[in-house]
Length: 254
Image 1 (cartoon, one colour):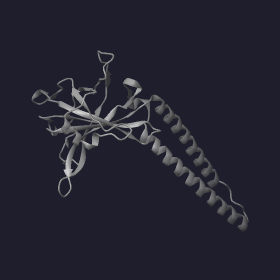
Image 2 (tube, one colour):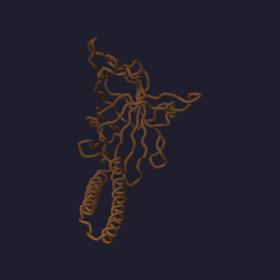
Image 3 (cartoon, helix red, strand yellow):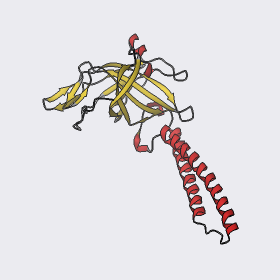
């Protein structure tokens, strides 16, 4: 994790950045970025990301500019084919970094991680499935509560038999509820909770509006184990149309 004094004041370092995802290959050295690489389905080739503006922010020293260098991006399928969820990961270089109070953007390579879904139908199916599972859980809980509220038999033998029967039934219902909850948790992990958390992009791809910003640190006995420390978050605000309709490039403002 980052040092405890980092951003302890609660200050933020926010700026607007426009980037372009291209179909061009980045420099060879980016092939070492294992986290960005895809899989057999999405392909392991990385493509380049180009900054389109010079972002600024206001500090106690006035308006400050942030130098942003080119980067690369890759995509990896997540949660299985059915969810159509992919991890979109890219990096940009910040050679000079930036600092506002005790919040610092390191002068190094910075990573951006978010998710996307390949078709709007996948999100529609997820919404329906979430509602179905919610209803099933409510029904299961209602059945369990009804059993608990039942009046027991007055005679000792009937009371014991009824207690045993109710206990067995409650165990079955509890097991069913736990399984339904696990299914619901899986759906909620693979899809956004509601439409306000996503933004629609080109080619019918839907993106999570928010993602995390991370830096890489090498750990282990000989410093070969990669670790990624979350240092902030970013928001995708808008996708920009390319002037050329036949261009493979995609732009967004975040």
